[in-house]
Length: 84
Image: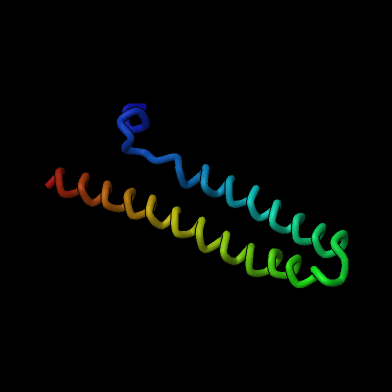
C-alpha cells in the first residue's frame, strides 16, 4: 500500500490496456457502420478506420505502455542499487 500511495507502483498500464480495448472497439464498430451506412463512396474511409485507425491506436497505446514500463524498470534498478 505504501508503494501505491508513494507512486512507486504504477497502475497506468492496466488503465491504458482498458482504454486501448475501448478505443479499438469504437474504431472497429465505427468503421463497420461507416462502410454500411454511408454509401459506396465512403467505403475507403470505413476501411481506413478499420485498418489504419486500429494500427495507429495500437502503436499509440504501446508507446504509452512503453514509457510506464521504462519507469518500472528504472525503479527496480534504483531499488537494487540502493540495496548494494
